[in-house]
Image (cartoon, rainbow, N blue to C red; front, side, top):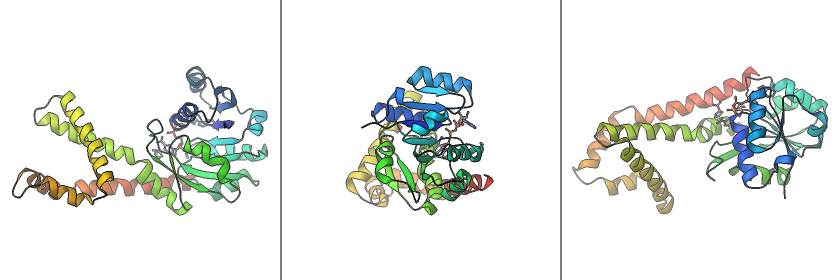
Length: 268
Ligand SMILES: NC(=O)C1=CN([C@@H]2O[C@H](COP(=O)(O)OP(=O)(O)OC[C@H]3O[C@@H](n4cnc5c(N)ncnc54)[C@H](O)[C@@H]3O)[C@@H](O)[C@H]2O)C=CC1
Ligand SMILES: O=C(O)[C@@H]1CCC=N1
């Protein structure tokens, strides 16, 4: 089964979603339309994915789409676009990926009764990993949106009050891991390994440690116990980690991301 999609805003996140949905054959290039104000972006999307891409909204195609994907930023004119979708009286399921902007804000801007779903998607769409947080609006139809949502990641249906937390913690999640990877690989180079060795070892340990947590279901404190012999090497490293701002740094970063999500929504 495939669905027809009309995306408005064809930036990084929409591209990652469409790429995965195309690969998983939930959408077809000839039945997918993207409107973006940037001509460069429109040409890029058409040339790379074969989708119908244009700089202005085609109302006829918008009306016939089964899913409308609202993919601009909270800082862009999403209110005007939502009003246009409302005026076109679309019967589609409208899925917004705009961080911070609530279902009530969308409904108000549309000035009509639309089946909105609010999601916060993960950028790991090419990997099969990563949760999208999803809140269905009052008129949204779960069975119509789910196959599309599942084509670009795992789906977690959550209450709307959790979406900003999900944005700062789950969706920004890969950022924290990339930062840890950078810190770790630099430590390897600092201690004398080549960059190539340091990168390969860190990636292997990241994947292996994640797999071990999953396989054992144990709390990481138990796994640390296995890796730290009495008076040995690991516990000396642990002492330095405990004495640093490592944990608070990560926690503050997540709280700042959550706070910024809420701020961006309020700006609308
Ligand atoms: N990048 C990410 O990791 C994630 C992004 N999001 C959300 O996705 C949305 C897009 O983010 P990105 O793709 O990173 O931004 P981006 O800046 O790459 O994409 C936004 C696109 O919208 C276009 N645009 C701006 N105004 C427009 C208008 N009036 N009509 C049509 N197109 C217009 C821009 O030209 C640009 O290509 C944001 O709301 C963000 O909160 C959500 C989850 C993760
Ligand atoms: O940085 C951003 O604004 C987007 C939203 C969540 C993750 N990336």
